[in-house]
View 1: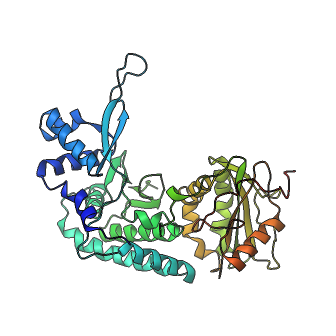
View 2: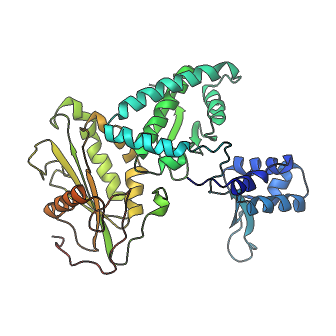
Length: 227
Length: 171
């Protein structure tokens, strides 16, 4: 555990201005590296203004630069690779007073593992998910079950992205604990929690299953195949 | 102390491969209906391993898996023994593939194990471990905790600067 207030504040403080926040949110929501031109257009500012703010966000460790091609042309004559921006991998956390929930999570996960209490964990998680789903249900507008699920998942930090009738979850809210050997427990817990949430939303025709891909949450949600 | 994660895994040295042994005690005989889902997954998960980047070798009988191998006196204890090009390759198969779902459900099929049930160690590329060697490594891990001769994902060790003398060769 290392609590360095200046370091923690530095990253987050860069997001103080609304324009910077808009640019940051835009980059993150695209789920892939974007050019300053695209960001500028999306937010409605000149390219130079966007560039200035994007580079400040890179300096603060909130975004990273990637070089790539935005157009279709490849090979000689396609031009220099464009400077693109994407969310930085580094996690930024600011908690006042200091909190260390991921240490608690790691210790609890190891204890559950040692005790062989996997299924107790999944049961607890599913019940809690159902509670959470019941609480969030009244605030949902959409009728389509996949859209309702996406709205709830967005609120819970999963960053859902719809792809051909399936939801991919682009962020793992438990990332650090899921990179440990207790990963099966953490992902099983996650699966159970989301199953509970969706059950509470009445989404009986949605299928929730484990489908791990590098860089995103292990769970995929899709409409059940019609039998 | 840094949290052990995939990003922090030691790199395989030139000429080194990674061997792994994991053991589990089935809660019922392998032909019991309770174990049916596990048995149904053997072939697809083994095929997944075979096709995974960095997979080198796995112990199997003519049945195509290792469930007939008895490395211990207990009829219910089954093992997996395999070789990979790196820790990352093994990690990706174990935790970032459909294998993760099997791990999620392990308590439906396997007893809780007191003590270490999985050991990792480095060996010269082009060699494969014997079951006896693998059991020796796991015992070492259980007795002495993780070290350069037998370790875990949680406490990994890099290969020694010179690959050790091989103890067995592929048939």
